[in-house]
Length: 94
Image (tube, rainbow, N blue to C red; front, side, top):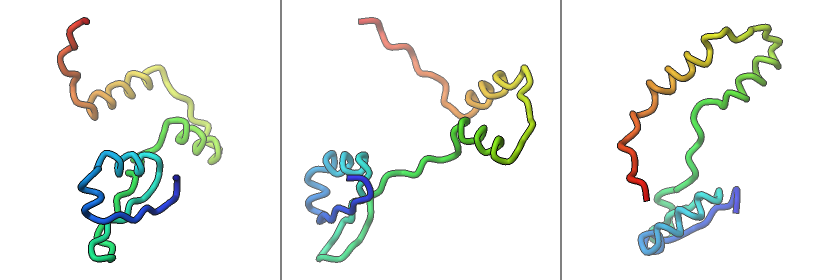
């Protein structure tokens, strides 16, 4: 279903939003129509940022000779800690 547009009426979308979101998860764009005219498009969100592997590949492609120092992992963990909310309470054991 990737790269496919699915046209649905506002009523169809409201009737089964879960199914609409499943189509989007599979890569489809859902065009919501009212009176046979497009009024909205629901599409998969674009990922933000780059994966670390992409950054390394880009550095290699540019001929970078940078080496990561011993504090790199600590810096990454600290950065992640700043960006992510603190963990919630642990779930009780079942």
